[in-house]
Length: 162
Image (cartoon, rainbow, N blue to C red):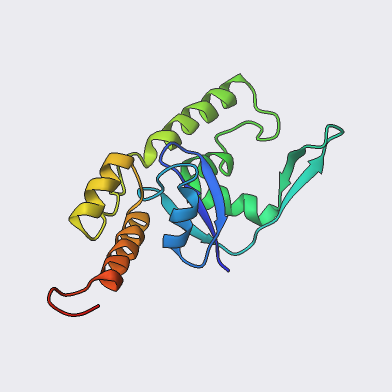
């Protein structure tokens, strides 16, 4: 099953395994409407968590290939800054470096805002509900198809016996 990285408009990033991009958007609705977000298929995924003494999982690290893919695909401005000679030391940035990094993070947070229009649901009723609920189009299309299918299944033309 494919793994997708969702680069949200605000700069956040999520991962979801789903058979299709539409299915990924449906899963991501738990966090927010991913319709206008950048979804990218990820081939190499490795993440490590530590078990804390309190019985919680704490993020430890990404695999090298995944971390590189995240920055390259989701944060190209930051990736460029971290891989060129503009910083004095990437591992221990000084005050000037930190200011450049913060400014670039600010640009990354704004870079995708409003760039990718959200897809519209296939039907007028689906578009209306999606707008009111801030729900993704694939979800509304699925619901409308399911409800329409139920109505057709239960439909009995007038004048015909049951």
